[in-house]
Image (tube, rainbow, N blue to C red):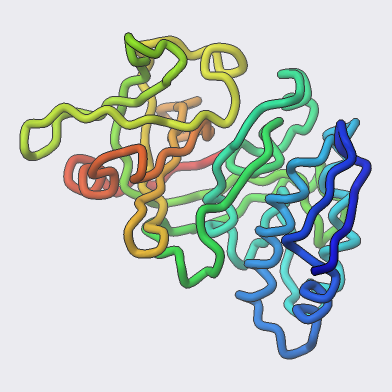
Length: 272
């Protein structure tokens, strides 16, 4: 097993998951777009653990890795995500926070992108075929003023349709640090509490408090058994503009997809 080290962290870190030989094999002309996008998400997961002095350097630092992949499967990289598989690349979960809150604002990345969080991120699936999407991407409106070039774009808003349900932000009385979102009762009359995994601190960067109204969107089912959703904060109700604030999955949310599909409605909205 090959190893490589990187000094862009607070300590010297050794990575073994993505080796040079594995990456080189995927750069063969016969590699499929799906294989390359899965490799990209793996690289993103490892790359997000690195300590980058200036958040604005995150995307430029990945350009060197991305360009040979794009020669095989041309697409645009929008806010660190492959445009060809944009919904797949949005299915990330923040792991831990190690930078200051100010770092997030300096990135100017859209909330749906892994570049927007100061945490490392992970994907709970590997191949694209492991994720059954329940959302539809209609349009990508690129902010050309923040692009690096025509291929690498820093920011964009997305027009998406998906099942959406209103939820209430709360916390467990016995564990005040455990945030949860509470939808209405399910069809069996059981009160549900879904543990949400925040992209940042709820009560800091987003200014949210217990009892605030949020919205949960059913995005995908992973490996045929784990429902995955994102939690949104409404920024403009009239124009249906939202930003992402957390992720929630079936392992922490009983009857997630079933409840959202039954009680929610298919909604078209803009995600910024």
